[in-house]
Image (tube, rainbow, N blue to C red):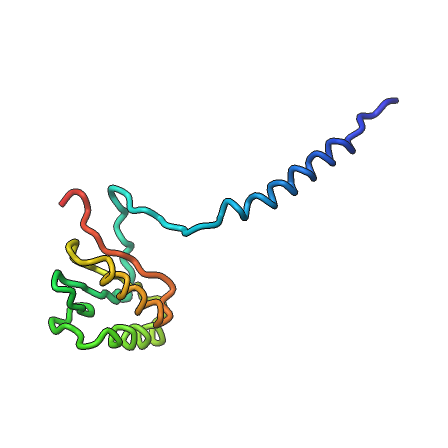
Length: 129
């Protein structure tokens, strides 16, 4: 009885596997950026109050609903670090006026990152408003 020789097929599959393994990391190089969409899903409501850094049009920074602006940017990092240690499940958000320079938003995000925050969300208005 004659049988089909599958060895050449296995050889071809191994060569294809090697090619994919070599080329896949090359395709992943570069900066990973998720561009904003026209609309976004609402943030899920959690039991813990989120830690929100507000940046107004004068590029003054506020934390949560405190009406007084913070005196130094270092305060953001210190307060975020305290919140991270006490309740690591807290959500961290940056809410900036649309006329604010990109640099001001990035500074707030970097300070939160330095405090050990694993991820920062950006607050936006929905298209319906």
